[in-house]
Length: 527
Image (cartoon, rainbow, N blue to C red; front, side, top):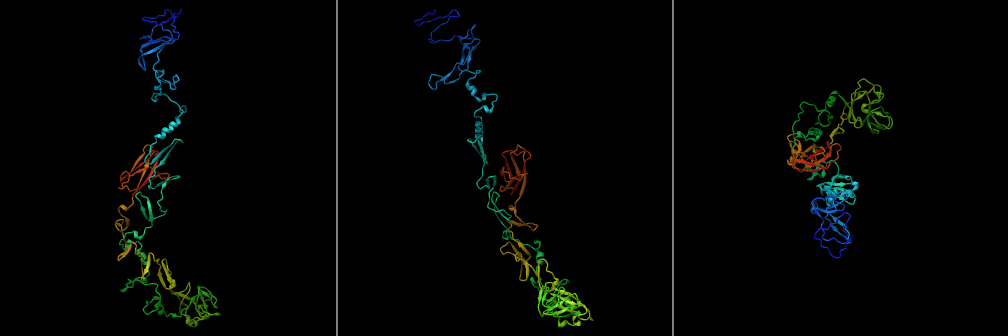
């Protein structure tokens, strides 16, 4: 039966319940200053619910000794240290650090990522995509040529090419292109280039741009040809006897003045006894009607004109006639057979026979109006045809000049020079002036750019191997003021690697991504 206690009981010894069915009922009163039994090992024949303090156990939080309790089959030793927080002051535990262990590890262990093993799919992590995008965006690093921007709201990474102000490159809708320097497209012979190798001005090369130089006739390939196109009457008159070295003068006109040279034909005619008649206006070219005014050889004849008729179907009608509005009559100096034999006459006008001379070849003993009368041409300026570069006016042959490159001055054919140009005339010939600084005359008498003003071109190739990103090309131009262009070998499209003028003889080309194996870029360096 229960034993009631009205006052405190002082136990200096052991209070023992002797049988297994007994118990100590505190009737919901406190146990104060109680100590659980300390044992170095688990007791034999334990009962479920039995408590001990096992001094041989180690508490992972507080050290030696662990409080244990007995289940129906085994002893359990939890880590007993707990930091309890009542966050809303309602008497309930809301947050607890170092709670009961799981596999002998507390919560901090499992929160440490380095202790995690195994795999987990991205779909099971609520912020995996956002966290990944943020991590990539925050890891972007700007380079000398690219600015990276992470748009967190749209989860986009933007790369903007850095363009140096005044660098000659601009961004357009379809990509990069060279900026317009203001020079119109075209072919030019004189260029102005800035320090970056860009053409900033272009004009046509003038003679004033060329330095002067004294030239001999051998320096001008067509000098003799050009001189030979001049007429003799344009040359300076001789001041001494003219030696023709036993050569002939051909195609001379018949003399008219006492001091004119006589042609062989003139002498032969005089010796042969030609019977010269007064000149006629025109000469026929075909059979005509011997009456009325008409047009002959492009010339309109009127009454009273003298005409040589030589092409009649009935040759006995040929002869020298006087034009009439009605029937024509023979000229009085050629109206008898003896007057027609060896008759010679000069033709004044006509597109075909103008300026020619004709002679009657019919023999003595004929009858005028019955015997055939035949005329043959024996001389005339019309036999001379002006070739290329020449023109003919009557008996005069002239050289055609453009008065820009060739001129006739004081009856002399000569090259025409601009007084402000770079070409001068000397006693030995034409000379191009050079300053021997930018232009010079080389040992082969050729004009060329001198020294540093010569452009040199070096070609190179870059072949990718999927690994190398930086390539070096040696140009040996001894200068960093060079123009460099890189383009794809197959497509011809310009490429834009990072170009470094490493030193005066080498250039380096860096690609953000290593070119694929076998990918070839052509490099052109001009300096």
